[in-house]
Length: 266
Image (tube, rainbow, N blue to C red; front, top):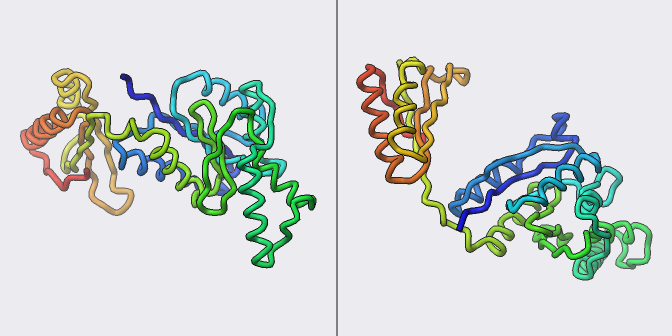
């Protein structure tokens, strides 16, 4: 069975304008790596309902596993729930379990002296909008404040708050996709090389991909912008046994070119 691709869609004008720095991408990469999985693509899009719907329409047509962060609140700039329904041509409806959880949260806040537990009040009716999902959606638990996200057609929709989204990503990976954990035979290793022109090592990188089909060799040069010595990070990724052999070959090539081999990065 082919391993499905995993993608991330980040929704929010605040990311594109620089008012906020995205934290979802590094967290999802970390969670996937711990489970022997990989991220294949990330997109950052605006809050526009039409932009979101267009992106989701394409995305729903794939068999990919997709995490979507942002825009599921109940203010005018939160358009993800509506856009998902538009992309799927489905009506929106209040999910009964979401209604229960949001009502519980309102009661907890009231007990803390923050608002009322009366769900007929306008502010609580507005909060219930966060439980309005495309018909057929399932909830995604939110351990931070109980306000759930939703899941439909292999897409997990979460808030833009990293403290909430990270636990929801983890729950989804461990609940819905546990059978995909550690199925890939994959490794990625690299080391630093000093005193070497990138052009001189390029033939060795090209040879690696011919000698070990399916392996990807890479070269990441640094000019010392962070105060370190100029260097090249050289490595390979793919089947573990091939990666190890390729790395030994690369080290020998660096030595033959009179370069200096530095520390292992991964």
